[in-house]
Image (cartoon, rainbow, N blue to C red; front, top):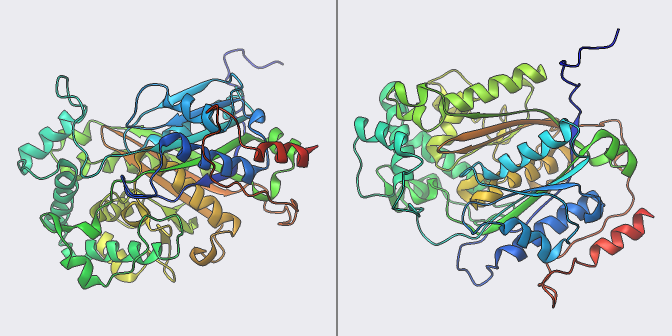
Length: 445
């Protein structure tokens, strides 16, 4: 008997087959470049990693927060090519990069495309983020209401106040100490020493973290993410595409992925912890565990949204790594670093690697793919087999993703040649694809 026409078709497996990113840098630094150059480098590296030409890409999902309309087209035309494919521009605040990844996966999972480029970039301004448009409703006005009604609002930057007060609420409720948050900042800066893509690669003592410049209340500058310029990219593909191009040896499967937006509890419970995304993170993680059949105990390595040290600790609890209120105990046990139960933010996280908003989610994806493929160098988590990604944007949206190698039986020597993609300047006509793609096409013939 044929199935009902109303029954959904089986969802297809989706794999990350190539990743790439730029080094994250301070906005306005001498080595800072315009967004087409940043995006071009990340995209070229991802395509070279996958060893496919841009002409094999069916669609592109491009994320950025600060920029004019259709920057995604301009970025791709600049150094990848013009093939007429759909290019979808995405803006979901700090979760923009993982939202592009989420959209790319849906396109393949639903059978609309075989290969999709997820690309994220940001060219930011110096200093704290502020409101860009004063003549219209602020998207986070409901979030501000919770903050103002519970703690008030000062002249300090708003984001540090929100996450700082979330940490203060945790201290009041569970007895967490300032030192627990500082230990997270110390840990992430220590991790980033071995990450050549990090904006900061300096190691600090715990005392130095705690004594650094105050940003808001107990939150010091070494516990806060910086503004950054940078780009990251991932190539997603169907199983048929992986088989066609022989990409099994590096194909990382997206086991489960969930996006959640704010729930009524984000605002009705008058909790700053809930307001900054706790419940939507918790629900997204729960759904991922349910769909994958995995538990937190199965995870080896995690990249999560540590925009501030307080949010990393809150997220331990939201992801189910420990019971609510026990994040400080997890920190004290060392279960967030090498030698502990999980390695959390081996890249250095947003705090030290940097946070170019549109690129962050895809940089997290890149790090976890390198970890699962055993290509993370000095950052390598021994024996990493399952990875979790968490990317949060106030306003709000969160994306949680679980990864593992899609074809673990495939020999690491399956692909015997590698092609390096180097950053290039804009071609004379501004729209020429880099010659690396011609080289890739030759290799594939």
